[in-house]
Image (cartoon, rainbow, N blue to C red; front, side):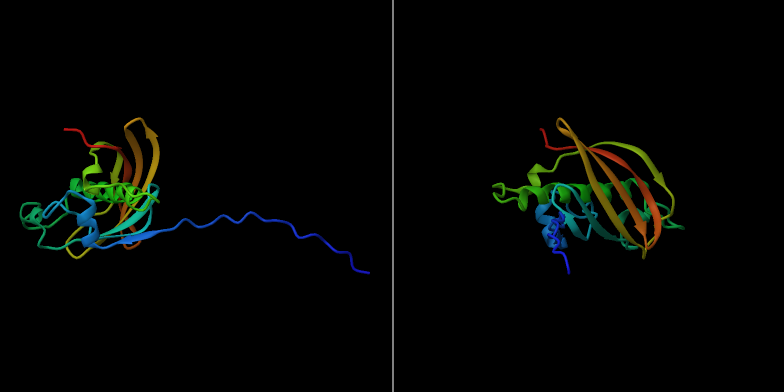
Length: 171
């Protein structure tokens, strides 16, 4: 004779909703404009938590004219800037995708890069490369937020480290 077994409840963790943003969406989210707008697309964005982005590196970038004329290398500071802009997209997405979206210009809520730490560059980035950017927001520290960032080309890590960003912009 078979014995009936009561079904057990298994907690199923829901996958967070993700968003994707085109270059036009990003222009509405960030105050940056050419030549300083560094990301072309954002995807897998979990608002306020994490996201991925793409920076297609073109020989037409203005910094290649002088860095270096005979051996074009994307400056490390520009790679960091691209990662920081992805952080801003993840942060602004939290404001835009909330049940009660904030009024006004979302780009006005983008703060500043406060510090860069433990940043290591492990691969040169050259024209024709496509940088895949990753950002994972960490804990809030008052008006600051820690962030873990990475940039890779294909399967090769190009740069990784930590940033501190401000969560608001002041005068």
